[in-house]
Length: 556
Image (cartoon, rainbow, N blue to C red; front, top):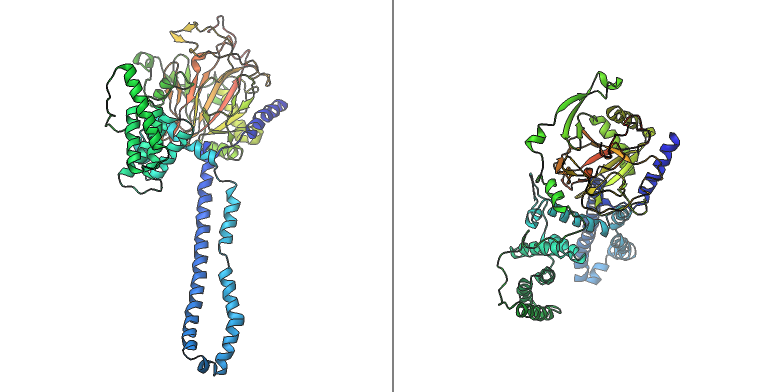
């Protein structure tokens, strides 16, 4: 058993550690930067104080020497006639001016620069800044927030002093532009222009904003508006190296299009560009709209008829001795597939201990490549995770035992307890927890699709190296409340489960036949406000033969 745990730990943990750990993917690790910045500010104050002290000393020298030279230059011979003055002149020029030179040559910045050099290795890099910018755009899309709301700090349920300046908005737009994401480039360049027109001061020029904005609008297929914006650019800077050529090209292109369509010219709309002006380009995720709607609490399929089938009860794990005297509170979250929530699963003390153990080990969360079975990072999973063994602390052993008592399934062949912390816009897009095999997309049960229209290929090596079969079930602990966002959603049947600290949800990924239940495709919605902590146990098939026997049909 210990050999198995060690092997599993080595495989999973070592793979995670080899992945590059981006700072923006974990709020927990980003908090360290807050204290780093505070220390640097203190160091900066000390540097300023030292510079001011040095300057005060130099001023004192200058004042004293100025008074002396006024007297000495008024009557040089008379001044030097006094032997004390002659001696002091020799002394000043030989000794005191050297001391002044040494004072001026002192560099109080050495301490500050040294402190900066020590901390710089932990600073975010360009990849982190780009990742954080894309995270804001992800939140903007998922929760349908316009750029102005973001720039003013007006997020659902809260108002903050955290605002984005003209230059911040411009940099957001430039990040999108450099990624050929002209949809978001338009939104953020437009917001930057709006704030500049409102009189806000900025480093970036209006010409630069119009340059990026006009070309991005052209890329979105809006030639009339691109022409109007380029004309504004030419009016501001007639010598701009691209504006004149772009304007002629846009006008020629529009004229050609109008001729082909036999239409007359219509001036650009006077309505300002905002969320919804242009259609967001489609991406790799077919159920994107359904998934994001569920994250906003829209499109839920919880009908009154379905709700009438949901109950709450006390759960003693089929008269498990450890639960008989203190049964757990169990609530139905969904009827088919059956998803339940258990209350008061983790105490605050246990949660803090688990987080304490996990923090030093947090690394960029990975996904299993369907072709190779190897763990790798992916843009659709933004979080950091750590894997904890029972031997790490009695709390982990106790949590593992509790999961076994509740589910009735052995955790001897389960994966280690995975702890995850989500960063800026942290998410995990729709995915399956189990390894997928070829399936019949026409197979249905209770009117629900067993398989989505996604045509996934085999993943023959997904869990082969573990030798424990497929992931039969998922036990997910919520270790924090989340102010906004962060729901667990199931796009196939329209369910959303919201995090509640100390609770856990449980569902089966496989039917009793061992076939995957494709309805369990789920996602972790982006965290809009707050820090989301979860831990989960993926329970595997081996060892469950008598605990969850096979059914008589494929979908039992």
